Length: 460
Image (cartoon, rainbow, N blue to C red; front, side, top):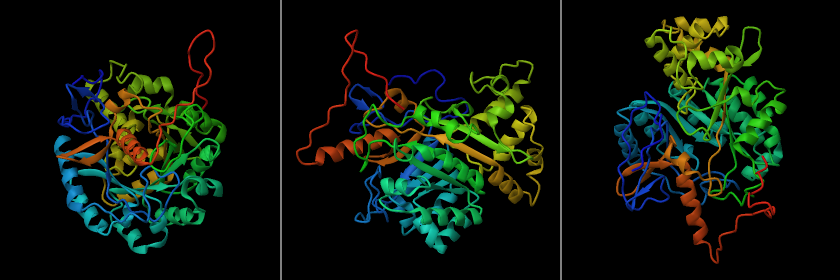
């Protein structure tokens, strides 16, 4: 197998790669006829636990619907999780339960109890919010597990058009009720927008402002629409892209957050994800972590850009501690409710001239009775913004698959996992081939200029 690029996996993330086995397309790498699974540390392990759903979304990347009743036995889910725990040296950072609508799994309480008994730092529940808005029993269950669990709430915007395009109906009231109920229960929630060019890409700033106004809405994740499942054809030259989302941030938020405030994750390919933090100071002003620290200071003291600490006068132990704290903060598995997040913020406060007096109270967060105060501080004054562009067959890059750290649990002759984008592309190709009289569409190409065959740039 080809060795991963230098620097991968990031320091401090040891793991054991999946063993090669035949019959698992599409491959991140092929060698001698064998196909390899995951070749990178798993930041997020995604387990699809249910095909069934209470919606039939036009842009669902898994093609779920109320017509599909299948759910995965919890024994199979746990077997896959346990295999990944063994490969990851006894600890998983994030486990994401997805589907379909995972809250419809009839044994969700038992599954959460079993997962909570394992060394998994954070459990995420993907949800469209319908049951959250209406079912007190589910809300009680999520409240019971809120110290280690959070909700990824599908939230495509504030306008009716976005909901009808992506979800097939006006779900604005349901989304509002779900978010309000989660906030009242102090359950950390990430608002996840599927963004499409010409549909809701003008609402990115509105979603950021909604999160800033909502306690415990600790994150916003913008995911440009990609081709998979029921998602229709997307013009490869006229689609919303990673850089397109970054470019829209400044104008839509009055420069409260711009592309300069986000950085590539250190734990995956730089095109896979951008992340940044907004923090509210004592005067009520929201500022980005980069603006507070300064780019040069961030680069010199934390090694964010060069992945090293430039100041050699800083003791080696301190440099390593600060670097590891930043890797934990700017990574796929980070969460504001992470048990060690107080240590991360404390190191940043003490070593980076953060200038926010309130965050210094984190120094006493380990004292009895202070845990809820810490949760409230993070829930009301910190927001994580993520841009996560998934790949389809028009945007597939092999290097990204090799360096992917978001993996889907799979079952064949053995429990393994594979990069999320590879799994979705494979599934979509199989659906197309099952259609009668299917003919793969030709990629739209503009006429090449006489001076050469270079393709016109993609509009973002």
